[in-house]
Amino acid sequence: MSRHRLLDTMKINMKLLPIKAHYFLVFAGTAPVLPFLPVYAWQQGISPAGIGLIYTILPCVGLFSKTIFGVLSDWLHIHRAVFLSSILICALGFFSVYFTPALPLKPNPNPGAKVELNCTSELTTLSHCFPKHRCGQNDFINSITTNTTTTCQVTCKLSANTTEEVCPLWNVSCPSHTLNFNTTMNLMETNVGDLCAAFPLHNITIAQAEVLVPTCPAPVSLNCTSLCDNTGLMMYLEAPPTLPPETYEELLSNSQFWVYLGTVVVAWCGLTTSVVMSDTICFQLLGSEASKYGEQRLFGSIGWGLLVVVTGALIDFVSAGHAQKDYTPAFVLCLAILFLDLLAASRLQVTGREKGGGGAGAVARLMFEPRVVLFVICCVVVGISTGILWTFQLILVEDVAYAWDCHFPAMKLLQGLIMGVQCFGGELPFFFLSGWFIRKLGHVHCMSLVIVVFGLRYIIYYAVVNPWFFLPVELLNGFTFGIFYATMTSYASRIAPPGTEATMQGIVGAAFEGIGVATGGLLGGSLYRSVGGSSTFLYVGVFNVGFTFLHILLQALLAKFKPQSTPPEESMISRPWRQQTYGSVSMFQQVPERFMLCGSSSPVVYMPPSDSLRPVVDEGDHGDDEEEEDC
Image 1 (tube, rainbow, N blue to C red):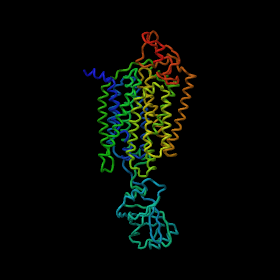
Image 2: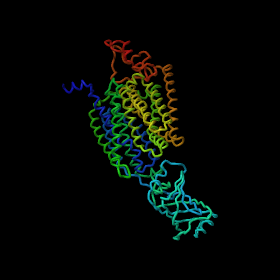
Image 3: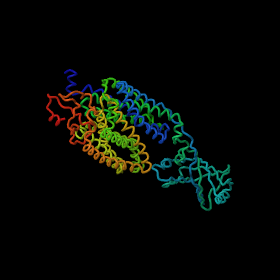
Image 4: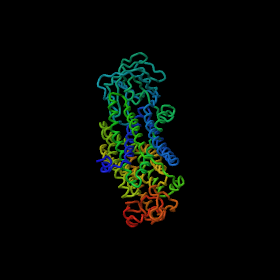
């Protein structure tokens, strides 16, 4: 049997193999770096405020890069050049992040720890109390198993009464109502309570004179600051000797921060542009079989899921015995796989697109169509929910896990499994099934399904107490990302005027990521600080459920009162592969207003803004009635 006959028997579409390989490689290439960028930034000395700033800027960058390069590629007909260049820029950008210098730590402007001197007739101690119980707050003290002596410099402010009580008893002078002394403490003798730890003092020395009996006949308490020579103890006392830049002013004054931000922005521009061009080219290759988009895109989920797991294991392996994680394997894998992707992408047959009759004017008119506007708003709503998920989900998992078990032993395992379930249990099968969902439900019902499932998912998050219960919930990621992404891209491809396919993909992608995800990060951060993690997801979940009902109502009103949005001649948005005359009737001839998407049982579906685009079959086909029935 010849090779071609064997391939025909296996039903392998050789035309689509390169796009499958590209999706696999581009997501496999970014998986080693993209999920770890926040923790890598933290290791480089960028504070949470700086990380939040970066992840507010990146979606905005994605908004402009998707839109601008989408328009340029359509206008200049340079889809192939933009596509291949974006992959190269993405690879070099992410690899450059590895060489960015760490931010210098600044000395703690308030190096002393706040302690309380308690002097009694039996013992004098230094005590430190935490405002509330923290998980693992006493791990440092509990880790001390042998006699460990530390020396501290203590400064106490005295009132007039305490000056008269303490200083004469210890036979010392206290100028300016200040008591300064050096002392030694054996950390093995620390008395640990629920919120406070007391350190017995030994060998108190004031002005090179030792206090023989450092006690007080009547109990005395003084507010003091303590500076000790044990770094671990100072961190336990919430007074580390050095701090990363925390304020925006401090961050922006560091050239290292700008270098890191610049490299990430370059990489992000390449990534977002390559995604838009990938989807545009994929729909071009699929032609009239656009419902098979999910079957191509699922290979990206396979690549992402596999490489996230492999990269995490490699990082742990090479970092064994080191104080910090070594991310070298992640960046090397990223560069190598993305260069393989560049080779695979160069095999794609990217043909130049014909010039559309309407161009930018057609796109502008399209964006005033009520159904299109509502679809873009839905993309923003899903983007907000996605932004909160991407930014705060793993933080919520840690909150729930540590509330369940203060020393939860499998945190990284659980977080890795969550990402694995999202990918293999959620995205992978639902990308494969997305075409079926869109054919059966139509775009509008798919979008309603996505938003209501997002709401239910977040409400379940609020109710989770056992952290392992997050795993089955992540199966819903198949709806909230797999079905959504296929719906978003296929609708954009369906309505795009000829020659503006990349432009439309850029617009819906910018609405989702540039507006939605960025807003979700900011809104989620505000809610997280004010109401807490679980309540944040509850409030957003309730909003999503409410918006679903509003969305269904608006679609029903549009179907009843505005069944045809624009005159037929103003809505020339059919796909290039349908630009022909069917029988003796032009494709722009008006047909009944009950047009619906193939397979939909309801007229309330997303469709081209004009209802006049349904083609009439050739005389040699089965006829209007059968075509109408079979779609």
